[in-house]
Length: 104
Image (cartoon, rainbow, N blue to C red):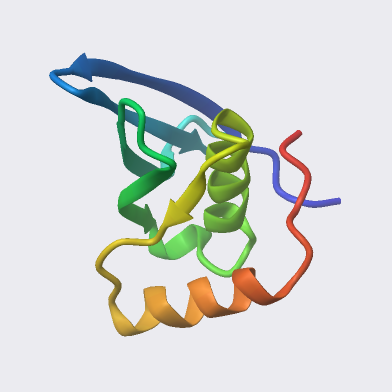
């Protein structure tokens, strides 16, 4: 059986758009990872500002799950991965090639 994550979301309206986040907690309540994003009113894309997964929770599909939640929130917008580290670029390339995971 896979990891169970509790994911919370929120954000704030800002002039011209919305800044939001998804935060994932492990079953013991500790922070496992998060994804911050920016969405401009009337834009056809949503920008990932930051994705971070704590070392103990890496390579378990959490970043991909957070991305799926973002895509579920904005189904008609293109996701822009923004600035990427080498590891982030490798992850983005991998998730862009395969079928997208379920959001639940």
